[in-house]
Amino acid sequence: MDILHGDPDKQVPVMVPAVASGTSAGIAVFAMIRSRGRTVLRAGLGGFFIGGFAGSATGLALWNHNRQRRRHNEALVRIQATAKEQKFMNTRSMSPTYGMAPVPEEEFNQATGTNPTEENAKIMDQIHAEDRVTRKAVRAER
Image 1 (cartoon, rainbow, N blue to C red):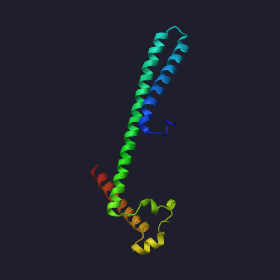
Image 2 (cartoon, rainbow, N blue to C red):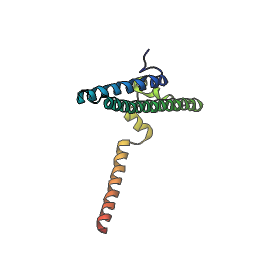
Image 3 (spheres, helix red, strand yellow):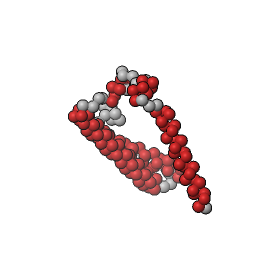
């Protein structure tokens, strides 16, 4: 049985006590070694509280991870249902990893009648010119 990669809902009841007890035992041992065994009760209580905190934090992180995973899966189901209704093409099939190569740049430019690189350069020049005008106006106000 693989707890780490199995059902996410089964992780929380196993991982939280394991982290809590492991942390509390480790802290208690460390504190007893550091104090040379003089304050066993204090070391035990400190380990208990720190272990409880670590277990709680682990439980919260696992709960949030599982919640995000469920939300992600629900969103994927909705997207797939919408894609089937709308008869969209599967986007994975357009990826080079899944067999279909992307359209070459020259062919795309011919089909659209524009060159995106040149269009982007024009837009960036326009943005830079507007920024220069704005900066000059700000300097003039000072």
